[in-house]
Image 1 (cartoon, rainbow, N blue to C red):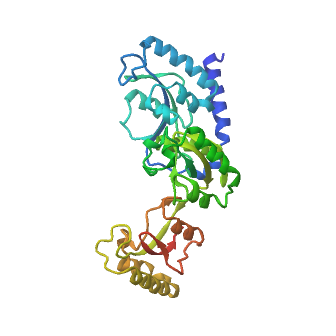
Image 2: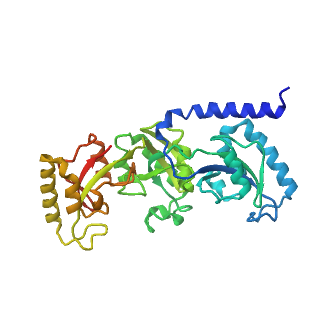
Image 3: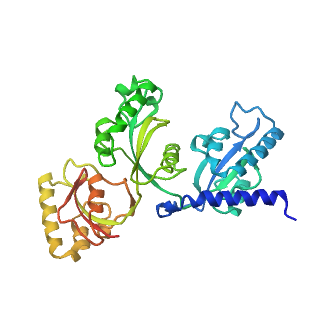
Amino acid sequence: MISPVSVRLATCWLLVALFSAGLNADDDQRFPIGKPFAASHILIAWKGADRAPTHVTRSKSEAKQRAETLLQDVLKQPERFDEFAKSQSDGPSAANFGYLGGFERGAMASAFEKAVRKAKDGEIIGKPIRTQFGFHLIRRDSVKPVHYAVRLILFTHRDVAARLKHVPTLGAHLRRTPAEAKALAEQLLPQLTVENFEDMANEHSDFKKVDGRFGCFYPGQSAFSTELSHHAAKMERNSLSGVVELSTGFAILKRLPVFKGKSSDILLSYRGARGPSENVGRSEAEARALADQLAATLVKDPKQFEALAKKHSDGPFAFRGGKQVDWFRDTRFAAYEAAYLSMQPGQITAQPVETDLGFRIMRRDE
């Protein structure tokens, strides 16, 4: 005879499978994070547990009962695990929707790691796991999570701007109310398209002159990346969101497909360019002339690329013929990525690409 527990667990796995099926469209956006484990959790602490928040007054037995009751709700609605974690967890990862990201062996309490090790990706463990910190409701996450590339137009306000590192310390956003910030986003939204988003970001966003680029990220990488991932997961690629409220203000998001770039380049730097070019004595005009000369040489004989990179490049990978470490979308200069996307595998740029570091002759290796 099948036990009620078996029925509950089978139901949970069916729901998880159905929920996961909706993510299949993003399977090509999954990339490894280089860790053996990844997990999310909901922590129910008791008074006196290690690092328990001061507001926690429940006893250990009350914490256990609370964890068991909450687990039944989570098993019935596994797709809402993130929401439960944000609203119910006593751990600092509550702000991160419960995501802990990837971790190494030995990084977690032994009982926690043992439970994760036995679980399968996407599985919500069927009983609370006790550690010195409290009772944990645990979901094992994939070590190949979906990655997101999101650009945003952000309007901060006085309630959040003081803790932001990447906006000017002086400006209108320090005087705006939350209602005023939201109104600015709502007024701009009808004017936005996928095509004009970057120009509008440079003109209107509190993150100026970066095309609204936030980089490439995945849930659990940081609190803000998890927050953005939570919104991006609901969006189609190459689409815009409505006005969303973030911990940093009110924003409009654009989601782009993620790709992993494979390229080589020859960097010709000059005095005054950004980056480690202390020993570079050439002027900007001299750098441009040399870049043009090398590009013309490679048009005639592309097989010389590695040799010319070793001889002339000012980049850190000159020693290996200019071959770069694989990189994700929105982690390189905009001009660099635009050139990459316009090229075919094996193609070399006919004209040098100008960046803040200098002039680059690129080859797409993918």
